[in-house]
Each structure stands twice: as structure tokens, then as C-alpha cells.
Image (cartoon, rainbow, N blue to C red; front, side, top):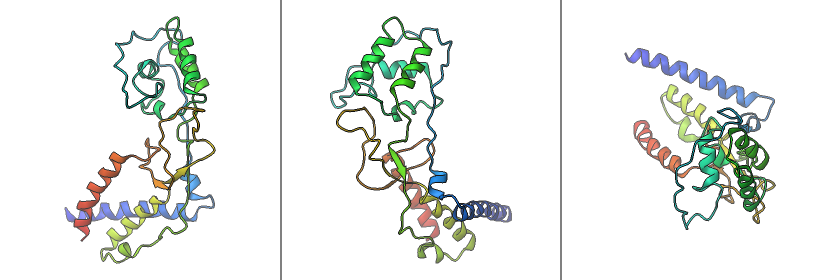
Length: 228
């Protein structure tokens, strides 16, 4: 049993190491190569002329969340019912192209005679930008390529594995893109822009996430005990 686990570990480390070397030796900037953002395009999940199902009564407005686009309300509820994106999180990551008032007025024009699946798609195409465009990937000049804490680990398989994983961190560094941020009410966004660089979880999580950061700490604790 131990032998099988050792062979699997060696294979996994080899794959990670080959990928890490390919990233480091690529002629393309590895940060831009692996951190490019692909924005989602809405598509109707029902017949374009079909009316959306009737909506349940809206919840009361929350005083602590004054926005009307991304909080519980008619736009969010209608878009959730239409399922225009594969991931339900996509919509709330998309900043609007116009002010909140302009966007809500446009939604009300669309929904005045009963909202269809096609109108939801048109509304999203015309009034919302791509998700993830408010952030940009950056490379840290002082990023340690071979930290002493890893190179001092006696087990070569664990050392190679951790080094390969360590190289990925530099691909997850982000900072705000000042040219695309919503400022002065010119558009609406759920992003709270920090004034420093930060690490994103990756995958569907394009921004920082406090819950996942707490999870990472919980996972890191037993790993540190194991390696210690």
C-alpha cells in the first residue's frame, strides 16, 4: 500500500513539476498567459419569446445594502430565474456599463409587458460589462523562487511537490485596474477595491474571498503539523 502511494506521489509531483517548468520557461509572460480573463456571454435557457415564470414576492429591502442591482430585487430575481449563465455567481461579478438608475430604468422598460428570456439576454448584453475586468494580474519582483522553508525539507518528494505548488502563487496575484473601476457613481459593481495587491482563490473566484482565505488557513494548519 505504501509503495502504491509513493508511486502516485512521484507521478503527481512529476506532472506538477513539468507544468511549473513549462510556465517558467515559456516565452510568453506566465502571469498574462495563465491569468487572462474570459468573460461569459449570456444565452437564453428558454425560447427567446417565452415569458419568464412568475416571480415570488420580493423580500424587504435591506437598509445596510442600498444598491438595487445586485441585492434582492426585481433585476436579480429575474436574472436568477432565467439562468443566462452556467454559473449563477457570474452576474454579480459583472459591473454595469451605466449608472444604477439608468440600468434599472432600462430593466423596467424591458419588463413593462412581461419579461422574456430573450429580453434578459439583451439587457445583460447591453448594460453590463465583463466579469473580472476590474482586476489585473501582476508579478511580484520579490517573489521567492526557492524559499528556504521548502528547500530545507528532507523528503525530496514533499519538497518538489511544495515547490511546484509554491510557483502557482505568483500566478494568482492581482491588483485593481484603475481604468475600469466604477467611481463616482458612473457604474455599479460589487467589488470593494483594495489599495494593495492580493491573492485570488482562482477558478470561478475572480476576486478575494474572506471565507476561502479562512478555509486555506484551516487546511494549512494540519499540513504544517504533518511536515513539522
